Amino acid sequence: MHTINVKTNSRFDIIDITEEVRKCVFEENAESGIAVIFTPHTTAGVGINENADSNVLFDMKNAFNKVVAQHDNYRHAEGNSQAHVLSSLVSPSLTVIIENKDIVLGVWQDIYFFEFDGARNRKVYVQVMKQ
Image 1 (tube, helix red, strand yellow):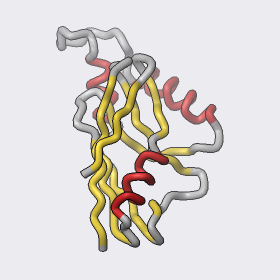
Image 2: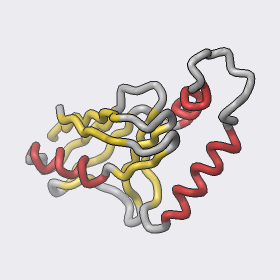
Image 3: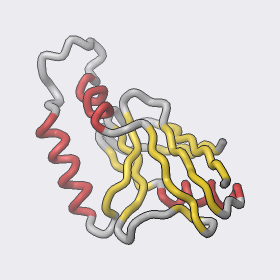
Image 4: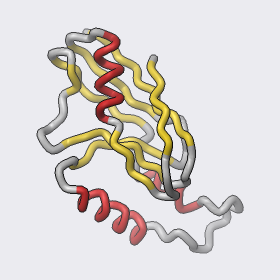
């Protein structure tokens, strides 16, 4: 298993981790198979989305903030309830296909780490399973 260390810069941050995942697959010398990407944090997640237009990430942040208010009548006393709710909308894990020693993504796709309670140092684990 590989560990990717992610340093987030703000309370709500979206970080491209595609190249780090590719490096994990390369180091395993996997011709084909799958890679499972997982973050063990309850206020973060991982996902796949568009990489060509940075406005998409901006729009995602705006939409998330409209769907889940930062300050509401939350009962959780730590002040990060929005982060817990948002992380339940983004999965803590995802699986990508490996073919020809690389991850298979669409032309406009990259893998992102979603931070909802930063800035922090976070971990993402990558488990490569060869076919």
